[in-house]
Length: 112
Length: 113
Image (cartoon, rainbow over the protein chains, first blue to last red):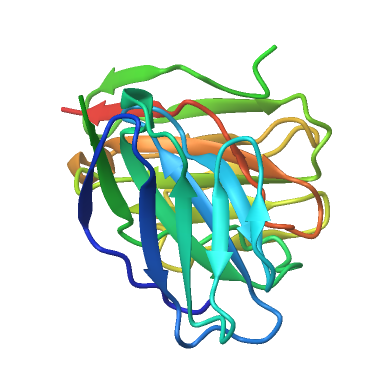
C-alpha cells in the first residue's frame, strides 16, 4: 500500500468545519483513498472513500486533488463527539484478504 | 444487533497462560481479521482469513493462532502469554475481495501480569 502522511494533531472549534489533510504522493492509479476514525476506546469506524471524484456522505466529504497526490477530509459541522484519531489509508479496490494498513493518523480535538 | 462482537472485553491473566478471544460477525462477510493495538496506539494487522485462505503477518509469533469454526467466527488463541502481548485486540470483517470497508468490533483489552 502507498504511504500516507498526516499531521499528528489538529484542533477545531465546535460547530466549525474540520479539514483534515492527507498526502499520498506515491498513490497508484487504481488505489482508493479511505478514511477511518477511532474514537477513544472504540474500534475504528469507516467514514468514506474515493478514487478520483469528490465524495460526500452523511458523515463527511472527501476532496481529492486532480493529481491524486493529496486529499482532505471535511467534517462540515464538527461536534465534540468527532474528537478522535483519523486515519487516511490508500489501497487497491480489491486488495484481497490483506485488510488495511493503518498509519499514525491525525488526532483531531474538537474544542467547545 | 452488534455487527462484530468480541468476548471478553477485558481479560487479565498471568504470564505463561493460554487464552482465547472470540469474535463473531452477523454481516454475512466472508473475510475476517485480527488487529493488535499496542500501548503506543499503533494498529497492526495480525491475520486475515476467509474460507479459502489464511494470511499471516510474518511478524506475529506462532504462539498466536486464529481458528475459524465457520465463516461467522474467527477466534484468536494465544499460548504462553508474555508481558508484551498486553494490548487491545480488534476483530474486523469485510466482504470477500477486501473492498476496503472493514467493520470493527469494540476490542478486547488483554493485560498480562
